[in-house]
Image 1 (cartoon, helix red, strand yellow):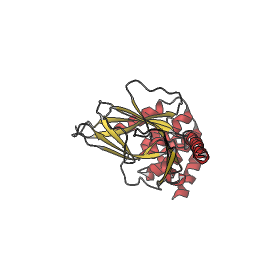
Image 2 (cartoon, rainbow, N blue to C red; image 1 turned 120 degrees about the horizontal axis):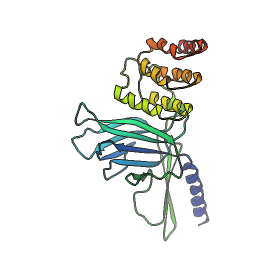
Image 3 (cartoon, rainbow, N blue to C red; image 1 turned 90 degrees about the vertical axis):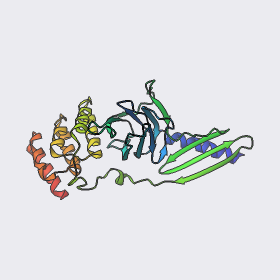
Image 4 (tube, helix red, strand yellow; image 1 turned 180 degrees about the horizontal axis):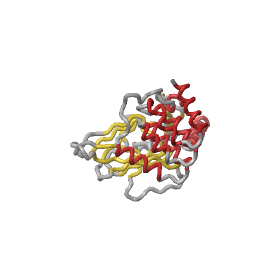
Length: 286
């Protein structure tokens, strides 16, 4: 019995530690189309919703699949949907679903915004909130789920016998370097963001109040998309400080579809030293 309660208290401590670093995901349909969300193959909401919020996410990326209540609407898939920012901080991220104007049944999932996690945040009344990893079964006793470093541990304590059962499941988790390091020239000969998606991303960058936040959002946009030199130039122009412009110009190089035109970024800088530093950086990449 002493061993059981020791294990129980230890699991509570681990659970508390794991919950200290979580992110949240909100997805809403601009046109009110109801949907079901799958994260890493797991169904999140059994009842289709048009405005869904998933809290207590512990991983930086998830593979998402969205199936619409209307079977005529084409389902959406998003690999490596981002929950964390470029600094490795789990965020409160929002994505928007909208209908494709050119195809009546095709849908789009666009990045909308992200903010630091607020422990006391209260969602709007029309938002359906689900806590990721919460038990779906109704059993007597205590049930807990913990995910740390790619290992899931479930602990169940049931009355009246106070029996403890543990289950350990190992899941594949990429290393930090694999999660964040872009594949060199990964966007070569690919298509840049569409005009509509880019305009939405630009508006999100502009809406940030501080330059460092604009830079973080700009890097999020680059990480999730391929960009042309002109798109990179427009985003960099939203940054007030030379240091931030240079930082983003370096970061965005691996996500550029036409790096041969990267010299067009030179005129965003006020100092020739920044041009020289960017040139040296690109030379070392090649």
